[in-house]
Amino acid sequence: MTSFGTHGRARRLAALAAAEEAAHPSTTTPAQVEVQARLQVLIESRAIWSAIVGALIGLGAGLVVFPGQRPPLAGEESIQFYASIVGGVTAGLAFLLGYSLNARIANIWLGQRPRLRQLVDTIALLVVHSSIAVMVALGLFRVFQEAFIGLRVDHLAGSVLLAIVGGVAAYFSFNSGARINAFTLSTILAIFMGSGVLVSMIFAENPFWWHVMFSELGTGQAGLTSFWTFNTTLIVSGIIITTLTAFITRDLEIWAENARSTVKQRLAERAEKHRRDSGKLPLGTRISNAVRGHWRTPRIMVVRVAMIGMGLSLAGVGLIPISLHHDGHVLVTALFGLFFLFLLLGIPYWLPGFPSTFYLLSYLAAFGLVFAFALWMPVGYYNLTSLELIAAAILFSWLIVFIRNIAAVVERVRQTHAHQST
Image (cartoon, rainbow, N blue to C red):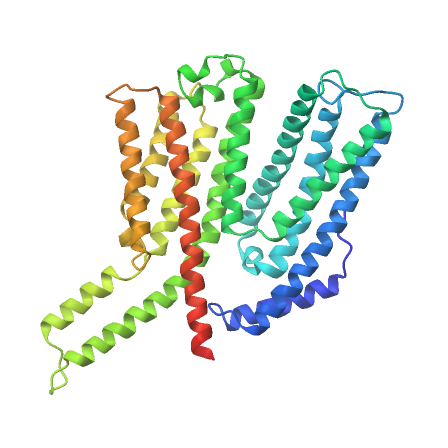
C-alpha cells in the first residue's frame, strides 16, 4: 500500500510546522493555522489513496480465493474469515503510513523520542488498529449471516465485499494514525480493550467463567483463543496507556509553563505590595508566598509516573496470568488500583488550577471505587467480575473527562497568548 503524494510537499509542511511550533509552543499563530489547514487536506488526500489501494487489495484477494465458489457470509472459508485478514492487513499498513506522516508533520516530537520507545509504541498501536479491524469484520459478518440465514454469494460479490472491507479499514486507520491525539487514543484504547475482552468471553470454553473474575479468561482453562486474546489485550493496552501518557503530559507541560509564570508574576506583585520602605519583605509575606507558590505549582512528573505505573501494572496483569502465579497476578492488579487511587485523591495537589468541578469528579470517582470494593468485600453483594466491570467504567469515564479538561485549559492558554500578541 502506498500514499500517492509528493514527499517534497510533506517535507515542506513538516519544516513549516516545526518552525512555528518551536517559535510559538503555546500559541496558535495565523501561520500555524494555515499549515494545519494544508496538512488536513494532505491527510485526507492520502487517506483516499490508501482506501483505493486497500480496496484493490481486497478485490484481488477475493478474485484469488473465491473463483468457482459461493462463500457464506460467516463460518469456515467464508467472507468473514477472509475479510478479517484483509481488514487487519490493510488497516495495519494504512496506520503505519498515517502515523509516519503524523510523526513527521503534526506531532514531530513523536519522532524525537528514544528509538526503542518509538518502536514499542508503533508496534502496540499497529496491533490495536489491526485487531480492531479484524474484530469488527468478524462481528459484522457474523451478525449479517444471522440476519440472512443461509445466504451465499458468488465470487464477484464476495470479492466486492472484501474490497469494501479493505477500503474502509485502510481509510479509517490512515486517518487515525495521521490525526492521533490524546482524545482519539483514549477512545481507541477503550474500543480495543472492550473488543478484546468480548472476544475472550465469546471463545471461553468455560461458560461460567464470570462466576469467578475476568482474570479467569486469561487461564488455560478458558481455552487457547481466550487465553491469548485476553492476555495480549491487557499487555498491549498497558503499553498504549504509557503512550497516552506521553500525549497527556506534553499538553500538560504547555499549560503548566503558563501556570508557573502566572503564579510567579502574582507572587511578585504581592511581594511588591507588601514590601516595606526599607526594601525588606515581612516574614509573614515571605512564608505566605512560599506556601502559595508550593501549593499552586503543577507537578506534571507525578501525574506521568502514576499513569506510567498504571500502564505497566496493566501490562503485568497480562504478562502474569493468575494460573501462572496467583500472588504475582494479584500484586500487579492491586498496584494498578493503587496508582489510580493515588492519582484521583491527589489531583488537586498535582494539578492546581484545574476546574474545581474536575476535582469533585475525581473525588467522586475515588469514592465510587472504594464503595464498589466494599460491596464486593466485606459486604459480598456481588462477585469480583462485577467489581472489575465497575472499576473499568470509572477508569475510562474519568480518563475521557480528564483529557477533555486538559484540552480545555490548553486551549485557554493558547487563546490568552493569541489575544495578548494582537
